Length: 106
Length: 118
Image 1: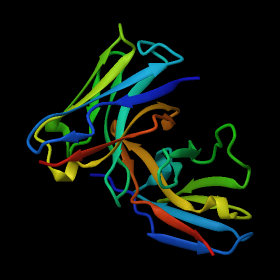
Image 2: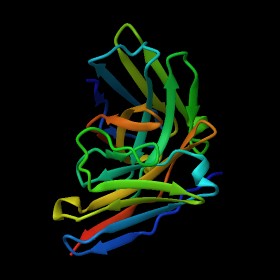
Image 3: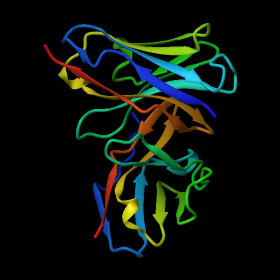
């Protein structure tokens, strides 16, 4: 079965760039999307179709997908961005989530 | 703007069937523009897709849960449903109903916590 792999944690200082990777076999052939998950809140879609931002998502969130890796980047990270981030893709009519990466803003 | 709201028992006994309802407002559940699904998150763990149902009635399920899961729709009530049989403590989770757009879940319900315990 298809799998998406994410590192468990990322730490950055406020104002720095945070990068999250999501690895899967030939992931570039699928659309990747990203969710922000804060404790006690529903997940929030921040990137879809590799790089598109839903309405209301700040421009500091960007995405890319090439080869076996999709990447979410947060430029100028703020304390409010501290959350867990999940990547997701579809494979043969099934939905696959990565294991999630916890962002700590130091 | 679509709005989703989960409802159902917060406590289910082991070996019994978990039943949840998602009420859709702001749009028609029978529209071909939408399809519907369920995602869960066990405490301290990641997101897990349970399954989806299309307006045609076609359903897709997580292979690891497929034999225990039924997803259905009641167009007259603008609701869709999740039934999961033979639950164990491992099914304790926050359950979300979702609807995707462009292959991403852009609308989520607020989530409902279900605990499996005797």
